[in-house]
Length: 496
Figure 1 (cartoon, one colour):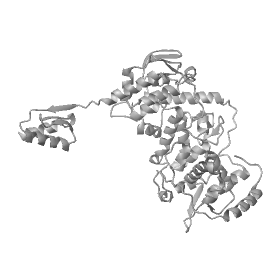
Figure 2 (cartoon, helix red, strand yellow; figure 1 turned 30 degrees about the vertical axis):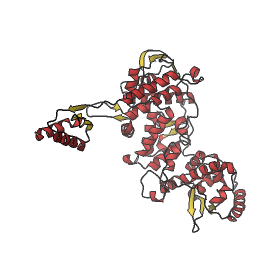
Figure 3 (cartoon, helix red, strand yellow; figure 1 turned 60 degrees about the vertical axis):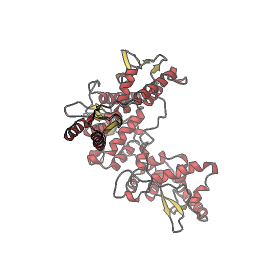
Figure 4 (cartoon, helix red, strand yellow; figure 1 turned 120 degrees about the vertical axis):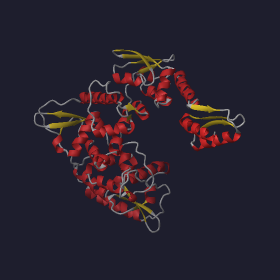
């Protein structure tokens, strides 16, 4: 958002007139006001209000920060603009209406600005403004609620609107040819595919990517597990991660990367600030790496592994080129605005045809199906009971498999409803139910006890260990978990 003129005089007059009208009303606070707190621990966290925020996108993570860290973010004018961009339309209107008003406005006065059928949108707007600390909520002695723009946010947004924003850094003048937007998109896709293949198995990736310690921490935290002298293996969450859509996968990685920033000695606020700053760069332009701090250089290299930026080296200088993924960070990573091109066709006889030449697609399909052969542009396989049981054992659910098949349905079948045959979906759910219906537990059976007292004491002993699976006092038979077999055997020997 940029402004070439200076509307300060007109806005100030309008603000004074609006203020006179607003001060004529004094009303009790609306019952819908919510307060929020942060999951992040900080000395200033006690200043935050008190309802948990679940971060579903980048701005939710910003909203979950403690009050003092949110105020620190607002010191940057372009971050104030990024926050403004992310707000619901009605919330943006409320910000601009209070932009030149410096006194608290009664909450009841806000409700007079909307029609009765717009109250739900009004409440969403107010709650979001409080979460992001754009509005500061105050309660006076009469227990009346008022709202006021955060002074730091207000001053910086005024500067941004009146004088126009100053970009974080200017593009480099280069004599070399830079990649086109299409080439950048191809690079992003290839880099992301390489990352996922290496996540499945380092031997599957055509070229190795040397992930930093910070990125490996992200993977090992929830996607990979490793025992001594063994190669890393996908966890249950890791298998589920592979079936997510790309935006959801990327958001998971960014969220975990920021969440463990303090373990690397990096302030999460600095990391969030830099990523929001990157969203104001122009896609496809080159920016000098020497303009970055040491922490920012490390971050850019980590993001390059995921395809968010492209690094290039010249004779004298080095530069980075933002891709569309990083310039859209401030909007949302979890929202899929466009449907991606599907490639999977599932038939009623459980045969599956995937029109793709991607090795990644083939490896993902192997997670829940039997791949029979792969041609240059076609993968042929089948969904079988055995392949699904293997998927279920790895923690993948029937609904995740069905969702993956629906989201990646070939355009020819995506147009019909349902895109996956109903008998296939029903059978996948039934096979999962069959597997969950019977649980196999290694156990030992004890019978022919010498007396009822010995049987009862053995039952009590097994209960203390939490190992009783079944008992029958009439026939004096006892079934216990295999884990406590040695303990109960020694106990019975002592009883003799």
